[in-house]
Image 1 (cartoon, rainbow, N blue to C red):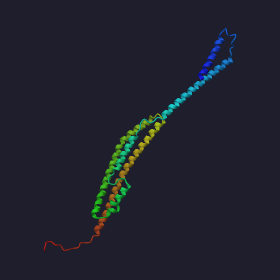
Image 2 (spheres, one colour; image 1 turned 120 degrees about the vertical axis):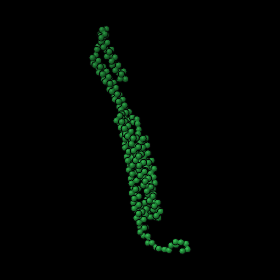
Image 3 (tube, rainbow, N blue to C red; image 1 turned 135 degrees about the horizontal axis):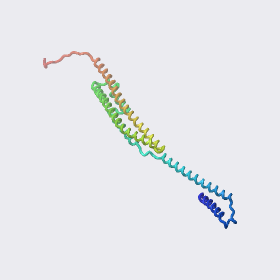
Image 4 (tube, one colour; image 1 turned 90 degrees about the vertical axis):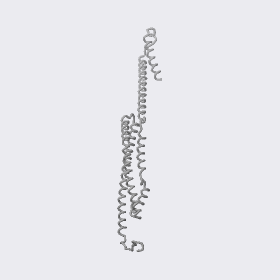
Length: 245
């Protein structure tokens, strides 16, 4: 409609000029400068409106393009790698030998082999408990070394993921990609913290079992000394050396 109005206004101006320039019609048509000025102003306004609408559409197109960039997803994900690393560390913790990371198992072990149980029972029972405690300590140190080796094995994976995420964050085309890269970097940090917790837990478990073994050995030694010191003296008796004599 705007284009039609603009075309009509320009046509009217052209017709007026052609009629005014024709010698045969000059005595019948009078040039109206006011009408001519109004037509020029109307055409200029229509043209300005068209330019404004074109600029508005251009701005809208730019805005939609920016929105599309901001809503674009990050073209990469390290979640699978991080989950695999966490699962590997968790598997090593679950493979803890003898006394696992379980409250009930710990309570059961301490009630049968540590604490008061270390200095009670027969000599054979105390020797068996001492052997069990020694085996628990050796197994705990082995478990600690395994967890440490697994965590060290996760370092290359974590380093590669960190490099990829930092590069993706720096080259992000929109807000969503930058946010997703930041979230994955936080997930990587959480995975690394969980590895640190796993190493500290395994090492603390081994140290605690060894300290408990030493304490139980002291309790057992005290009980052995008590049993030895409370024995009665030697009582002589008749001994038959040779049959019939």
